[in-house]
Image: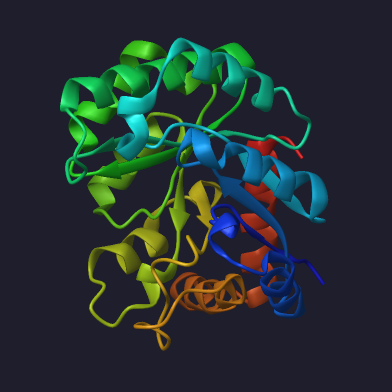
Length: 252
């Protein structure tokens, strides 16, 4: 049976990562990409990718850490991205809700795109209340040359198409299962199959019926089931399509 691929898991946020991975394996998931958020966490995600079967790293500078970016940090990041288990630059982007000056966020995001191009790695993109500016920077910096995924996508069909036109995929997570979700189910129904990836963002964005509790990697089975329902696919087809998309993006 085809196994699922979780393209965005904050495994470093769990006290017992091997335990939650084993839960996920029992639920049919056997590959995970673990994004970096701040330079302090890069060594941890590198060690997880090295020591845990099926785990890959994606070090980068999240917008909430953008004011900590320095040339020496760029050199460290370049070395980490040369590791064979490092498959992407992430989690990078723009966020109107974090307490980092907007010009600093823009400068660091542009630097992350240039680094992704230099290292020939796709990107895990974080976008909150910033899609227009973010896409402009991506176009200016040639982000389409490496591509990537807009993680935790929850926007409209129109926004989804702009992202796909920019050469990026859509990370579909727990939000698609929420009873109040309106736009995302229509996106999942209508975008090309080749644009869909599955993710948890665990321990965040917990799917129904577990909202209110911490998200766990095993819960991606609930996301897969909802995507299958919306696309009128079997679970097997859902896993086949999304896993092939992930492996193609990350060159695995």
